[in-house]
Image (cartoon, rainbow, N blue to C red; front, side, top):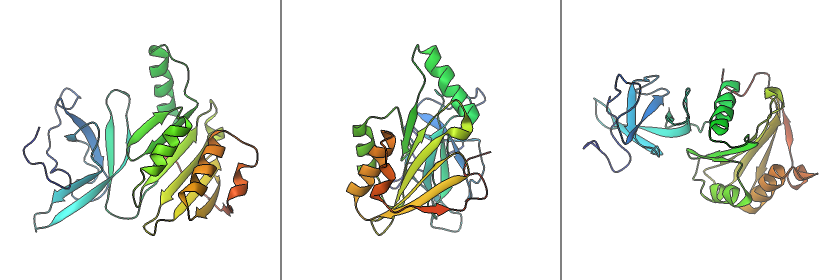
Length: 226
C-alpha cells in the first residue's frame, strides 16, 4: 500500500501498469475536472473505492474529489471508480446497453439468471436488492449523496428508475422516470416518506406515486451517458 495515504483520503499516484490491470490492492480511476481531469492512467487503493480523495495542489492546499460511481469498461471483475470535483452532486449514470450486456454475460457465465433491478449508492452496487438492502442504502446516505434504483429490461427505452438525493438541509429530492426523456420530481422531508416511495416503486405497487407530490420535468435531452 502506498505510503502517501492521508486521513481524508489518499494522494493519488500514477501506478497504472502496462498489463491493463492495476497492482494488487488498487483499482482504476477516472477523474472529471480538477488536477487529474480525464486522466485514465491512474489508480487508487481499492476496492472498495474511497468516498473522498484529497489531492495536494502545487500552490498549497488540497483539491477534493468525491466518488460518483463504480463501474467497468468491459470486465465486471475490473472495477473503475469515477470521481467528480467537490461541487454540486452528480446523480449516478443509468446502465448503458453495453453495460447491461456485460452484466447478462457475467451472470450467464456464473450460471445465474438475469438481473431485474440494481441499486447504487456511495459506490456500492446491489443486484436485485431486497427491502433490507434498499433501507440500508437509504439510511447510509450522507449529505449530497444519491441512491439510484434502476429496473432493467431487454428494451433500453423501457428501463425505469427512481433516485433520491439527501440535501444538505436533511431533506430529500426524488426523481423517477421511464426511458431517457419522461421524468418527474418530488421533495420529501422525512426518511420514512422516501422509504415508502422507494419500496412501493421497487415492488411495482399500484398507486405508489400517491404518497408524494410529483412534478413533470421537461427533459429535452437524455439523462444517461453516451
